[in-house]
Amino acid sequence: MSNPFDDLKEDGADTAESDDSIDPESHTESKRTDTESSGTDEQPSVAESTASSLPDESPSEPPVEGGGSDATSDEPLSPAETGPAFEYSEVQQKPFYARTETVNQFENEIRMTIVPTLAEAGLLDEETREIHDAVLRLANEQPERIAELVLEERRQSGSQ
Amino acid sequence: MTDTTTESRAVSVVILKGGVGKSTTSMNLARQLVERGRTLYADLDPNGHATNGLGFEAAYNGEINLGDVILEGNATPHDLIRSTDYGFDILPSSNTLEDVEKDLAGAMQGSARIKSKIVDPLLEDEYDFIVFDCPAYPGMLNNNALVATGNVVIPIEPGSSAIGGYKRTMERLIEPAREYIDVDVLAVVPNKLSDRIDQQTEDRELLENLNTATYEVNPGQPLQEAIPNFARITADEFDAIDAGEMTPPKPGIRHRSALSRSLQHNRPLQDYDPENDQIDFYEELAEIVAVGGVER
Image (cartoon, rainbow over all chains, first blue to last red; front, side, top):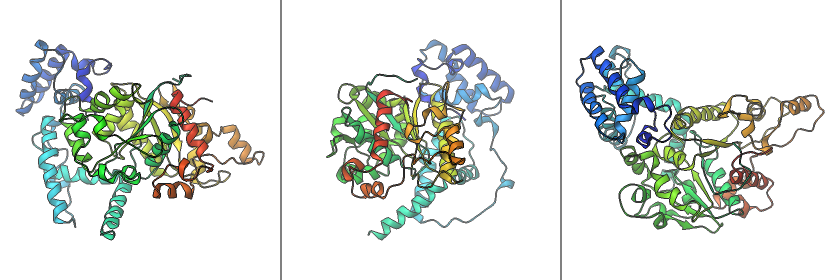
């Protein structure tokens, strides 16, 4: 998982631990090994061509670049290359009872935010099951927030 | 770690869990800081409880939002900031703050926008203290508050879920941020205490855990050193309490009906119930922020 503060990387001043990914040489080198070892996905080669243009430029690169490269320099495979984290056979279908507007909004979020964010990290083969599973994991992390949302909605409908 | 001089300082009141008392803590902290200098209370929580509670519904639903100041647009912080009846100014939340959060995610240096557009221009020049009331979930608004302030106050309440919230806050927010910036946890503040501590209650468990914790909350500083004096009970004191040699103290910050009522009446505790016994604790919290850490 990349550091949520990686957009600060280009700042360069206080980034002791991220030096390796800013350093053009080690950066491109690790990228290259990654692509050689897997070499099937087209996305890493796109990332590499961007990365190899780095040495000629100042380290002020778009934040997207930092986020993706951090993960690849630590791990043998980046999230973009591993394929889905679990198989379809592992999932279980459960109905959700949500209002149409909520479902529509969620589908918009998938299109407008989630998929583009994944794409920025080089991940282009996301599966619906991965997103749905993440939704429930998010809910598991913040069950109290769920209760709050239910209460808020009741208060709002009560005050109308 | 601990400065002995008062200087201007911005602080984030943050924990990745809802309902722990972030708004109560941050608003009353801001109110007590007014006694020490010019104070801005910045409500970054999209739910806007504090903004609406303090009577700024119009601003919450207004045309201009934080995004116009820190992203596109040519608004200045002054287009948003309002003065309250309680001595501090407010940077109101807005009903579009969640959109700002999304836009920040795609912005260059998105985590540093509030620092560069709000805190750097205002701190020292116009305000001595800026207190951020942060969202209960991780995201760009929390990241911005952390980068802009570099100082954190973490409220916590009895019960395992709040302790989980504390751990999440450290692991997902503060420790990742420390790869790029210095983050100083000024204080971890127990809230909503109500039980006795001479028995095995959740209050006792929380206070004993916090006060004996040896793991670091700041580099080189164990967690117990960040517990304010009003909640400080040493291991020896717990032993004395259990042996019946010491009257159990009433550590803060305690549940008081005046505290919840004061919020319903849209006022800081100081102005709602000036005689309340918990005000001294918020005063100590203001001292901690003013000097940059807990002093024993």
